[in-house]
Length: 114
Image 1 (cartoon, helix red, strand yellow):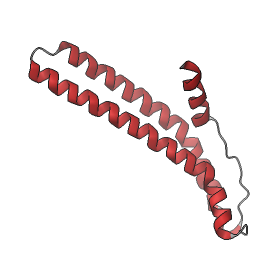
Image 2 (spheres, helix red, strand yellow):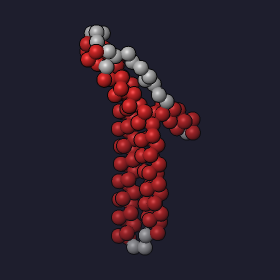
Image 3 (spheres, helix red, strand yellow):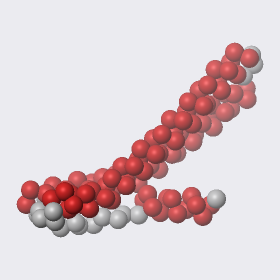
Image 4 (tube, helix red, strand yellow):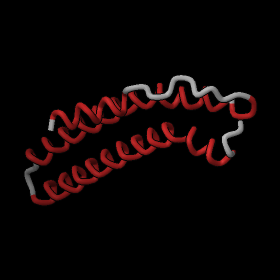
C-alpha cells in the first residue's frame, strides 16, 4: 500500500511538462500548462491534508456522540466528507491527465501544424 501511495504521489507532483515549444497562436499553451502543473501538486497536498484532518475531526465527533441522533448526524457528515475528498482528488487527477495530454490532442486536431 505504501508503494502505491508513493507512486501515486510521484505521478501527481512530478513535473512532466517543461516547454512544449508552441509558437504563434498556441504560445499561450506553454504558459497555461506550466502554471497548471506548478499549481496541481501543492493543491493536491493541501486538499488531502485538510480533508484528512476534517475526517479525523468528524470521526472523533462520531465517537463522542451521546445520543443516536448525534451519531447519525456525525455518520452522515463523515460519509459526505470522505466522498467529497475522493471526488476532489479524482478531479485533480483528471486535470493532471488533461494537462499531460493536451499537446497530443492539439497536434491531432491541427494535423501537426501550429
